[in-house]
Length: 466
Image (cartoon, rainbow, N blue to C red; front, side):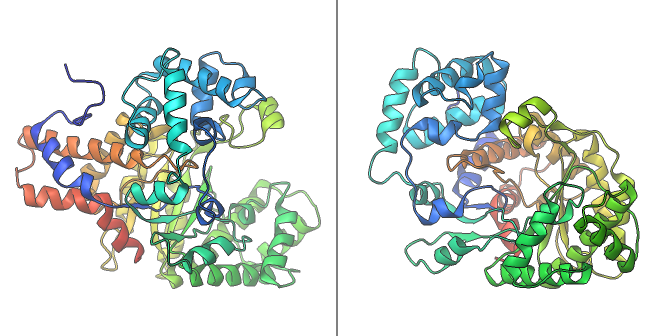
């Protein structure tokens, strides 16, 4: 029996141990998809207590607490911070098998030197010990990032954002980590949402351009794309809860766009035509700029109407969607490929039923001499657990090249989430070690060590050209 989360946690063979400790653990981190606030990084934010770090906005933890019967007062309500922490501590022993259980204890170990299990009994001691570290002079956001061996991170930014803190960070010679923006234009694509008209007005202000028709709209978006590029942006990000594909002319879309600005109701086909056209425009521009396009597919959002009205989005009431994506996604990609304008693309699915759909579809669009031009993105959200990561990598290995995989992202709003990269690397090393043990892969430590290093960091650096 192994000790709880010891140095060889998740490593069950000698090859895995060597690969992790001699190769993976030494590699820096390139976190190319996260939701960290660049303002907090620039201002070098400090935290008053562990509740602020862990429970202010982490819907992963909120879902577990609700499942454990914790009253909402102690989750998103007005209870004091210690009471909220105590309820989370009571939930932790009940969460065995869940990745949050492992992430929580990895964070306690790596950042605070706490090796005890978090529970109701240990909560007072852990609260005092962790908060003492948090309140020390050198425990700040920038030091967390640097001490986690992060070299590059990409935030997620609306096209109307001023990027003022990215500019300040770029010019700050005291902080060596690259903090780059990523272009997230969902609000400009979701023409069916109530806030679309308001967002168009924000785009007018940000671009300094009047928007009266669809071409004006594209011109304004183009100006923001160029602005993001000037500040080092290397990728976009799209939440495609379902994949739309309906061909149309620019004239048709111009009429649809004007209807939306006039507050007229759009049909589903009109919505799909607009979304298809704007994604094609953006894809062509990404190709021109040399960016990668990330497509996050198959989330079913805000399923609980009552709680959405009370708390708003991103509060733990989303789930996996089960829409069919193969045909419309293939048509979307092919419409760009047909003219040689398909950018580097990373495909993520929230529904593991589509693992082989994405992994095989992307194989049809590889090429241009770019290693892994089309990527099957890391196990995402509900799938970034041990089984989900293994299955994503097994699928990729079965039908593509695992060795060219760009690896893990935190997809997190927490500055303490970097041990998720360690978690992923341990799972990767163990998977390869198991193949060696079974005689499916030769024990060539130079080859395997290089593959592990590349997936951990090098592939992403080369892929994004940073």
